[in-house]
Length: 496
Image 1 (cartoon, rainbow, N blue to C red):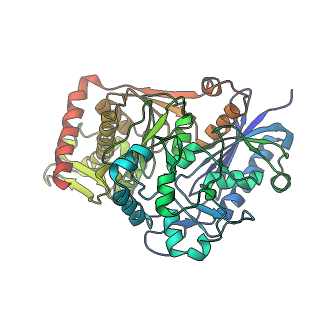
Image 2: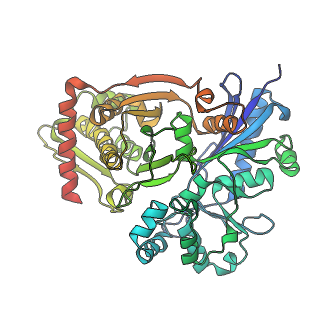
Image 3: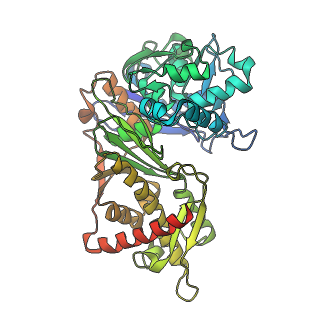
């Protein structure tokens, strides 16, 4: 029997990853990413961050070529394509579908004043009840910046799109988008279940700038002859799934239903939970978008908590406090110190303004050190505990929105490789942590299988998802964990 493969792309800001998944076994047979060193981000001015969309396409081609050769796959073997992508970016194309300028990507902050002005002018109630967020620094505000500062480019725009929309357009020659994508750009009105006309009117955007909307799981378009020749794929291969990186990470971990949580803890940290009712945080400290399986008849919202100061703090500690030992040894060193680090508390917010703190930038602080008692082991443990406590602080906001957090799904990577981090998170939150072997490009491939009808539903698609480990709360010592968390919150309260 001929092989049936599903192709997934994960378009990140550091690399583009591609994976081939055997549709019948559910196993990943080949994976690759380019560039092998982190992709460049252009920062012409402080706070700016841009990338050339052509670079994403070129890296996708290189990754695809490698995995097709590694798997010995033919163009006819690829049955469907799925795309995951860095969220909140802006790509502007002309009538020839050529990019007019570099993409303004997710971490670019130039549009903050445009989002804040819209929030103040339109009012908190209007924005939060319809968009579920402040317009903030999202795609719509970035487009407003282009309109005001680069009018000659703005006048040439035929369509605007997110990074994943751009890759789908290059594959198919057809621009389109999804409700999930529009919601992350602040272009979707949840109350009226349509494009947010009031925000479009406020900014002076023409409705024609928005591409046709297609379902997240569907035959959205097909690989065109030009792209097929360029990539070595078969013309007519369907593109059947698209999702932003955090909704897609949740999909990769089989997180689809209310109360289910997905988490990552790399340079920054994310807790992403699914909500079954339309709701939002009054202070916009967490963000709410349409999850991949959201529809008018089934509310599925992704509530996104982002902590900037996560793995970057752990890396800083490793580099500056314990440079001569491995991360594994650093974890062992931290474990020699009791829960609560004997009074040392670290507030980890040293990587810019934190949305969970209402966009305050308070910096990282180390508190409670006694020169006669504490060592570098205490600092190492307090750093990991502080990262966990920042997660739990944000999760309390999610719980106030009605989310019941009982189980956290995560990939076994980054901070989740640390037993101390995992045990502290489980014991403070009271949630069971399940660790899996998956990634974004594999998730995108399986999403494509759902959209193509190869899998009847997400349970079938992720039936082979490998659970690596389960961590349960340490009930015998939970009071100690909660006491340390309470002390940390007291320290934080004095700083905000």
